Image 1 (cartoon, helix red, strand yellow):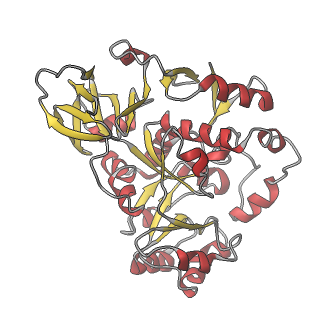
Image 2 (spheres, helix red, strand yellow; image 1 turned 45 degrees about the horizontal axis):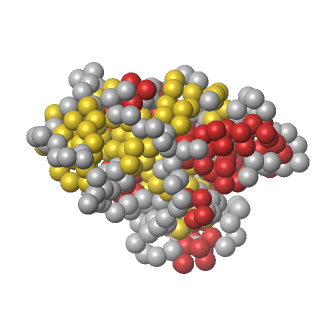
Image 3 (cartoon, helix red, strand yellow; image 1 turned 90 degrees about the vertical axis):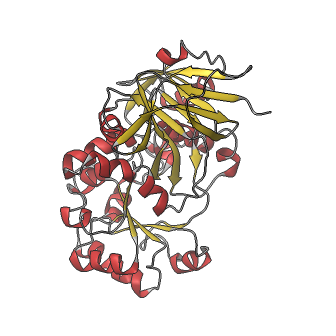
Length: 389
């Protein structure tokens, strides 16, 4: 029989602007019920979440997981992403050569931890999938069902990749990542290839102006927005016109190569540069992201808890500096020291994160830290934040 986990005393988000006081009963991997649980049965595990708001786990729509132990690479602003890539790619020079000494599987796990530490339960990794790593107690869920190409410039087999993608999966591609004429014209090239339709998800898309946005909307395409990465590379991000275009938009953190922090940081940057409401931004990392990535709805117990303050869930999310609890598939994957006193979890390991404090996480932190330290020395940063154990 599945062990029953009861999250008691918190407020549960039923949308970006409303939460209700109720208990959450988790049986195995799924949410069994919401309401007043009553007296817990024998063997149930109970966690008091008084003072917290419980919401669906966040969805990071775009990351390159193996690149999150890096610092930002590049100098100044660029006209397009290809120019940046050609400048920084020096695999035989520092800092890339040191990073490549870390086994890729270890780097991928650190990328998963970056997401877990910001309340993400599902991430879309824009690179080849690694089942041997992702399917063995990885820190977060990694989206499986999608097709992808890197970009028009770096994916000569783009059309073939698109045609091999099942019709009910999204097809994700970097596009319009720049401010020059090439970036502006890419969406029309994509359309000529027959690879722009309701499945197509455009990452960055800051090169889309009025005609390009109109075409994207007509074809039913979507956008993934990574504002801090755009600002670093190009000094600008999606325009107000793009944000108001009616094209569906999800939020992504990109990687530490160009972005500033994790998904919680990205939410704050997005709010600052756009003035969008907290409710709109909440949907970009929950329901809108799920629809764009075509994630199947269900009762999976993927939950995150943040300090409440009696605010709306979306306001609590935008103010949050860290999650206090992350549950994925009914399993506690992260818990704060404060909550750990109420709910001992001896199998978890401690990780100290600059600016975020201490966490207990479900990962072999001593081994992961040592493998990174051998290559990088004692100064290890994850998405820009210094780590210690």
